[in-house]
View 1 (tube, one colour):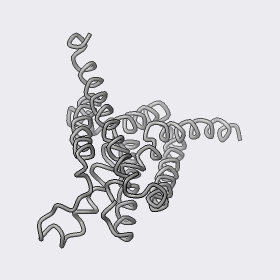
View 2 (spheres, one colour; view 1 turned 30 degrees about the vertical axis):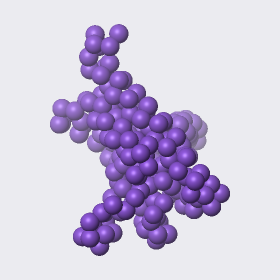
View 3 (spheres, one colour; view 1 turned 90 degrees about the vertical axis):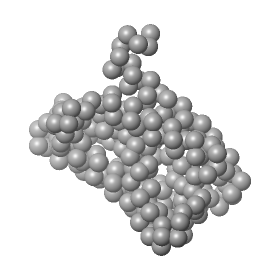
View 4 (cartoon, one colour; view 1 turned 45 degrees about the vertical axis):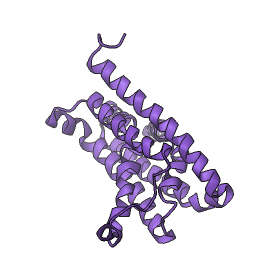
Length: 215
């Protein structure tokens, strides 16, 4: 009984922390803008792909995150810089209004997997399971490494992915409320925010890797 009373508050903090770091509600406009030209079935597939990928990425980070980064000699700060560059490139397409347009060749249009891939990159990685979520998961798993905590963290990750799936599933209702003009405005605003987020990732990573460079 005492173990359960000790375990639950820690798992609750971990779960709330994931929501704070990932902020799926804040990413919802990005999901809407990226799937505007998708059919309902394809939007569902992208949603399922993104949330499943997030669950897998966080689970791998929970179990093997620190060991994998150490194996390849990759620091979290290097990962943060790479994620920041990718986010900035996505933000540029959002600001220019090109994100989500179906500018593909004939072969790509015949392959639905091309559209589904946005669920993995950039939605799952790095927008959702980015450096913040991965590093947070690794820190928690390192601090509480007993099996009961790992099992609890795993269930928390699954529950978090389900919550994200439900939030993104409600995207069509937001589309009806906002309309195309509202979506375009939100897309460009989110592009600016993502651009700033990408810059912040890069600056934070550079500061950590080169402490004397930015003062």
